[in-house]
Length: 483
Image (cartoon, rainbow, N blue to C red):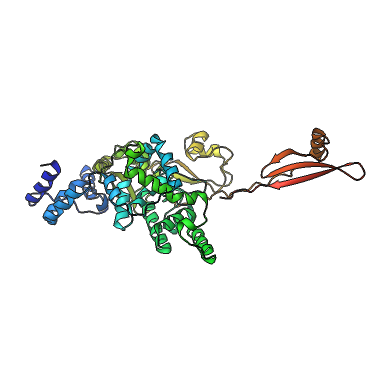
């Protein structure tokens, strides 16, 4: 009898003897007090904490024993051990086979290190995403979408300002409730962004009635797909995914997902090996109504700072600003460690605060006021190059004294407007003669003498009726891609 079977049967036989696990709910970071007994009581109360979707599997045998009986045992024994098995079993999108699919299969299979890094990053989040995808009755291929969007990198940021594993642009993120301010960017928050992305994909599927068109709209925009469909319909043409005219990136979007699906289905066929991901939660979630430093939270959980940030990537600053009820995501086995260490911690939770630059403030005096160098002030606030410290700008500075740190609500930094550089005049008057002298008379032969920006300038010299020379400047504009 296997270990898993023995555990489950023992749970059924000894139900009465099993201690009841804490009920699911939010774990709140309780206010600390000098009395150790009160701290321990607060920690004990907080341990009733992990949210049900991420509760450790230790609870599973007792749940079965409590009422599921033999049917529950059978379901648990049939549950795939590997998350990849579960993902493969849920594949239901129509198969696609074309040269673009094969091109992307070759691209991934020729980059085993890239695939390994992508799988390693996904191992923290994939179970949660698969749970949410299947809870909504969606194809499990959707759980692979972050692989083609961001390679499961929560810090991914595109030229179009899309961010996070699901690559939300700011406006769509706001539309789907992703909080974006100076302290936090919900587009990078794994839980919030996942639920927003699945909401959006469900909406798109409802609009277009097929997953390939829904995926095209996720990449290209629902308006663009709707217009492409309308154009084809007006011409009496088919309006399915394969028939629409669309940008190359969108044309390759579904084939790219199909290629990843094929690799997950049979990695050996492509000379790859996918690291196993257990079919169980990686993380659990607690909530806090107290501000806390990111580094301190990682220290209390006894986690490397990089691991903590990979699970909590939404924080823009080294402070977790608790807006009522802020989530902290930790490996499930570290929840107790965090809460116990928090109960014993008797120092401040926050060592940073915000300062808004006033008119007349000098940067070096601001730095001196808070006991740091100007270079450190700029480093903390990501100020480099030509960017200057200006009045009205919020700065992160060390918290000083015993007063409560100043952590006001602040909007997200304004995005710099994209500027289109106008091409300078093709040839200044003084350069015309120089170009002609260098070119010499060639009986009307066209010579390229200068190339600037989006223009190619040609000098054409032709004989005139009076025997002189006429200079003609011809400019051929090249199409500039606006993306």
